[in-house]
Amino acid sequence: MANFWRAKHDDGPVHDDLGEAIAVWLDGIEPDEWPETLEVEGFRKAVVPESFFRDSLLTRALEALDEEFGDPDGGYSAPTPGMIEAEAAFIRAVLKEYLVWTCEKTGEIERVNVAEWVRENRPDWLGVRDPRDKEENQ
Image (cartoon, rainbow, N blue to C red; front, side, top):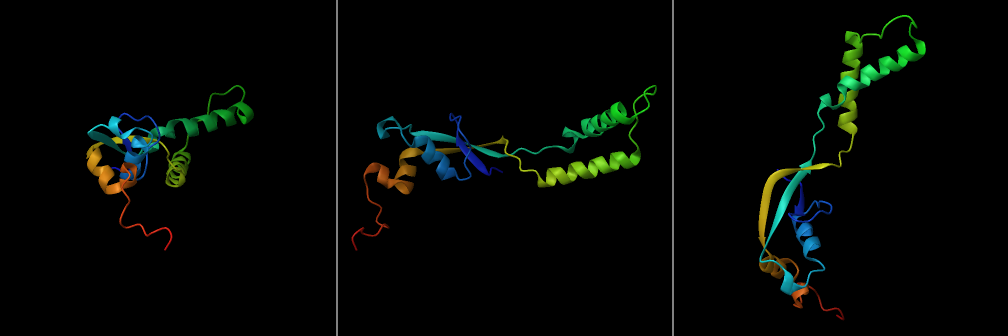
């Protein structure tokens, strides 16, 4: 399910509101140049798998320790079951707290009739005053 949206041919940022994605794409384009239909793609935050860095964190830590403190004539240290368990717990904690910014497409496409959307959501772009607005000088 999509939590973010962007017009299909837009390469700008995604928006957390479908209407905002439409408005941003249409803003600055003359009404006579608006397409009849606008396709808006859905996105969600990417999911970082635990395996993303599990193999490298512990290995790099042990290599750094061995380089600085290990037996100069010996090989590299092997991770123990306790180290592997601690690494997995550490990675889960980091991923739980980490704020992912990267988004991935969900495959959802909303096809929006531009003229209808503008009439319903931004009538001011057509020079039509929204009747819900109060008189400015009342």
